Amino acid sequence: MIRDLLELARDYRSYVVVFFRERHAMVGPRWDAIHKKREAYEAFVRRIIQQGQQDGTFRGDLDEKIVTFGLFGMCNWTYMWHNPGGPLSIEQIAQIFTTLLLDGLTPRPQADFALMTDHTEMQAYSTARQD
Image 1 (tube, helix red, strand yellow):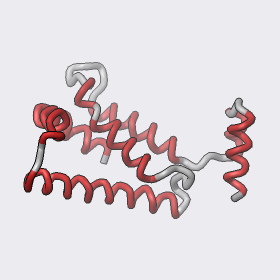
Image 2 (tube, helix red, strand yellow; image 1 turned 180 degrees about the horizontal axis):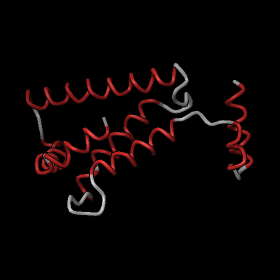
Image 3 (cartoon, one colour; image 1 turned 90 degrees about the vertical axis):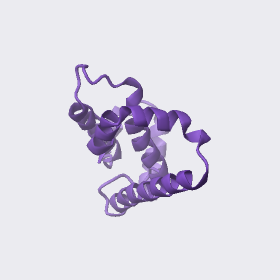
Image 4 (tube, one colour; image 1 turned 30 degrees about the horizontal axis):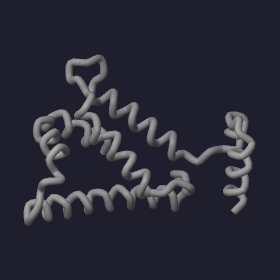
């Protein structure tokens, strides 16, 4: 999914640029159709995240709407900085984004306490795990 979003941004960059820069000016039936499709895709991604949270694959303490917005934000913003002739391919960037997202969603084992330096953070995490 991440690679698909990045490939679309790369392959249709000029359209993506115009869309993100001018979408605030879109109105009427065309905007309604685009908005409906965007909402459906967002709901699809949110359901994947919710399912992963329910079955324990993903952390349950993260708001699925914010995780979804973070995913789209990472992918949609690449049109601003990605250089097709640069050192990283879309596939490599997609792998980095995927690792970043999935590692951030992976439930934290108790061993992570060793990485926490703030006592307040440890207490909040411990309390949340007990609830």
